[in-house]
Amino acid sequence: MPQPTVKISLVTAVRNAMPWVQETVRSVVTQDYPGLEYIVIDGASTDGTLDYLKSQAQHFSVLRSEADDGQYAAIAKGMACASGDVLGWINGDDVLMPWTLRVVARIFEEFPEVDWISGLPAYLNTASECYLVSPVAASYPRRYIANGWFREGLLGYLMQETMFWRRSLWERAGGLDLQWRWAGDFDLWVRFAALAELTAVATPLAAFRIRGEENRSRQGSDYRDEVARRCASLPAPPASWRLASRLGKAGEALLRSALWSRTPVVAHSLVGDRWRLLRTRRPVSRNDLPRLLLEHALRSRHD
Figure 1 (cartoon, rainbow, N blue to C red):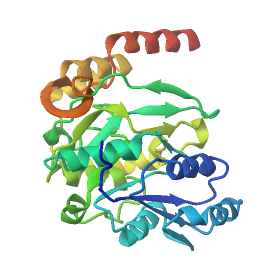
Figure 2 (tube, rainbow, N blue to C red):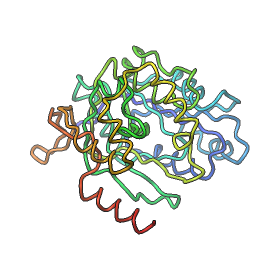
Figure 3 (cartoon, helix red, strand yellow):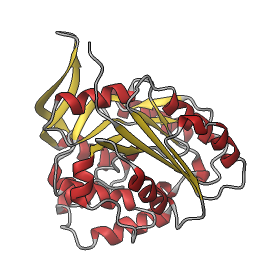
Figure 4 (tube, rainbow, N blue to C red):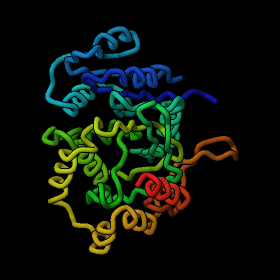
């Protein structure tokens, strides 16, 4: 099979990210994909991160280290250097899957109608073990994203590390809005959805590291506060959704499982050994019933 010719630009913005950044960089530079432009922006690290990055500089198209105004300012700086047809960023403690860039390139090359993709969410623990891959290629109704309904307490956050998009979509949306210091990704998805549909990909493309109390802003009140401010001017979700969310995790799971929509999905077919794009009805939930029951059992045992 001929190799895809799509150029992919990937940005990593880091500051004091040891030891996790080593795994992030390794997961990128060992990709079997020649059309990669890897841009690393360091925020003047003092914990050994910069020394490590300098030792790997031969793998980077750009390596820059200087004080900046936070994560999204650094990502925007990296994106300004990017020249790829397809863009994305990977944070300095998350990892790509070994097949990611080849699959991403093939999707964008073979399906010109696809502007924006999301793989199955996957999660790492502090021992760098992948302990969960969401089993369901979910639906991502464009209106729900544009309304800000993919958030905590409703439909769950969209996972940034598994997202890739065409440069043309980034340019039409205007890139990151740096007024959002913590929830810049959430705001970007809202604006992307006003322009294009999100296509689910039925394989994991990256893994998000859960680090408990250490974890990044997604787990903190700053992120939630900015999401709430961003959603203040957006349509409110239906009253029945808000009622379900008040029932806690069980209510949220029921809500997500009950919402189905026709959605574009890219999945691999053994017939012809190729990736195929189809439109089919899928749940908003990224978990199936057996997984939900297992999570309930684990939570009950912990309690």
